[in-house]
Image 1 (cartoon, rainbow, N blue to C red):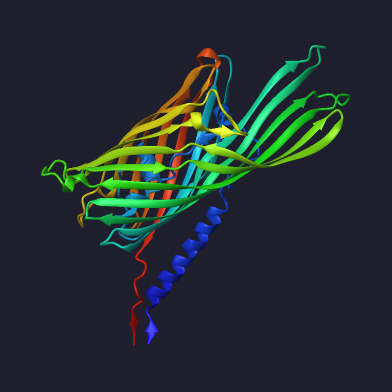
Image 2 (cartoon, one colour):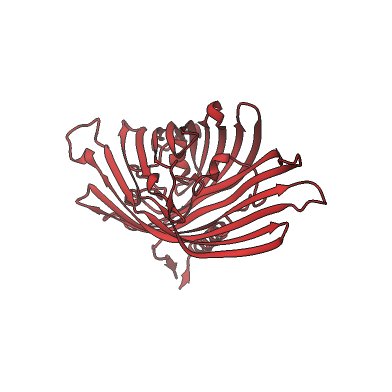
Length: 429
């Protein structure tokens, strides 16, 4: 007896995908330029700029996917993985163009990064029993601010504040369906990362010693997430709302162990310090959403996420300018009709939507509001593999009251590798 050549190839292909995934997991900063590249000054607050999802499909719809099923692993609500038809490995990438401006000046920069890796594995499709694994950034820090200053004695110098890094998570979750309409999911997340900060006083004069303080805060901790999606359309007698779903998730607070290493340089010489055993507390969050399929092709979905950052604690202190944050989105997806004579364009999925959000901090007593529009395409390569493309334009902040206005164009791409696992290899004599 010998193994079918096709199955040998599939096993080899699967191994290559797994190796590639591992490379991505540990190569998050493949596009990074340096520790302190220029970005948005708003990333200087707290743990930085929050990254809500790495899923290109839902990001192109302007939503998080709290109530949405599909053949992409759901990285926001583990209950959304009960409908996986086959094993899916999703790799997401993004490239962002940023224009930050105030009432006087503006600056432009760009950067790219991995937006996430998700793996969904259906263990028993009839029971909705699935397992999901993932690697997703939680936040990014990326800023460099320089000012020209003069000492009381009339000596000019350049003052620079800079930061880089962020926090990521690795997750493991399970999902299950009860009574054919109640989908449950639970997830364990391990978070880790580091946030670097630099304060530099550069006199540009060899006769005067420059001074700086550079610190690196190494963070690690864990939290849990639980979710539910109710297929309400199965419980009501309405053809229009036959596919109506309601979703909800809750994420516990995250206690991050904080270890800070710092290096100082002054006119008196160099020094180092280390602070260990502190705790940084990220508050709990929750979200809810709905989705419905109208006819054979149109999917409409909306959701919202809320988090009370007044409960954020760093070095034993809360932050007076931190408060409630929220994100709301509404999206649409036009999916193809499954028929053998579809043209290329008829086989595509078309996505678009928008979002509105309030940041977790205020600046000069003003809320920082953001909003944007999104669009994207889902391109099937074959029955189990596809390519997702997305683009978004968003605005955050304004130039009034001494604030910064960020305008962002984000390009994203996601590769979905799908295979039927746990099927015995065929043999032939």
